[in-house]
Length: 105
Length: 400
Image (cartoon, rainbow over the protein chains, first blue to last red):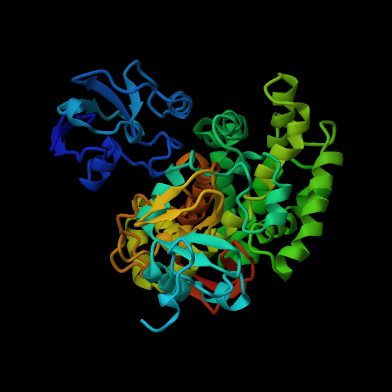
């Protein structure tokens, strides 16, 4: 199964398995990764699954309109590599993706 | 099987031959939903000339399949209401829907909500202080109504006469979205009254400056939408802004009152409040279901929903599906509730869900500090074709 690495604001790293087709947010919640709140459940409506993509094996799908609008309103300021983890669906090409959780959600 | 489950319609869907919008089913819907789920993921409701999607996986898939199961021909369970649907957000499809949604959703995005958070929090704290001084009160009229009616209706910003009618109009709007019955027929003149008000009375000079409705007029002035779309999009605020939040609040208070151990756990761990809200919306979903029109043949399980048919997507049943949720009928504030469809799912997921959460969270946050115990009496159900919630809920709060 492909894996994703989540880095906490304190620098600690955790590697978790993500089912193909599952979002990074969903995998984080199911594995109890701290910091990812995902209040809206994956509808790109709350910005509480904000993550910073540190390394991606290949380029990610484009940012959608809803996601783009929401990223403008994140608690930690938006960075160039900001994404909503609910909008990143795992597939084999993303195996090993590394995302950082921002200090404020 | 010798009962009705042996009966199928021409598409092979099992038949559930009951009135889904009758008083009896509305008063006690959950055993009926279970029966419908057991019949299959797609069932036929001959009384309403309607299919229903009953199980979690299929409901979620249907809500993602907005290209096949469209909203642009209305989302009601009767032809009259669907014939009146005129392209508000609820009854449009992408790409128009997505464009309009950005405009309609502007006041309930995170930054806009952050701007009103302190006011809502203070208002909730004062409310709970007042209620603690009373013996018994109505958990609906005195508590659940308060923030939506006192703050949200002002944010929407209709002139006073319109604001006073919002609850009545919203109840009628949801009655109209059900099947063609006496409740739906009684709602029609009220909905027409609301529409006339939006067209004629809610003019730019009369609405509250800076309010949500005023923002729609601003969007028209900026050329983002046609001026004649404003009264239509206004209704996306009037229908769902109050009742749904009120009912979700009432359900959560009722559940916590019935389960003192869970209230104690929530007081010890207030960080569970957001999850407790989601769990209440899963368990007692305020919206039973909306319909879609099948713009093409659409597979559900082993069957095919035929092109041209109408299908009821049952959020409230999906959220109790034993194929998805362990102990689906039990209330557990620590349940992993991610993925419930109580706010819908997909492109039409509830626009105001974060405002609703903010309101309910503010009430509970005020309560965990000051309320040791919640006592609830027998609730009185509000009979509505589409909404599921209480008209009244006797309550008493014990001070901490």
